[in-house]
Length: 119
Image (cartoon, rainbow, N blue to C red):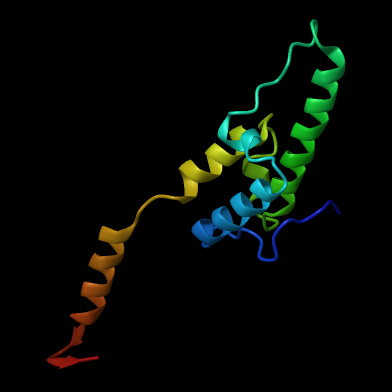
């Protein structure tokens, strides 16, 4: 098993806390640029050694992210090439703001009644 940066893996329900913990860990290792797009890959022709080193680092970060997911989540992102692509896909799928929907469900629960009795 590869290195795990955070103690609680992402399970689909804890996106915000997982994202924050991963961001802190990646920033502490000076690797956040690989997920936010600020780290640019050098040219394979002009700087082949630097490219090889950066690609190795990119793959390491990708493995850190994949190892921080519960078993049922990686299948949806395993074929993405970069850590940034995985990061953005997870954000797009799991960071949706469900506040209005949650409010509606809580209101519906509060108004539940059977016959004329509330419960």
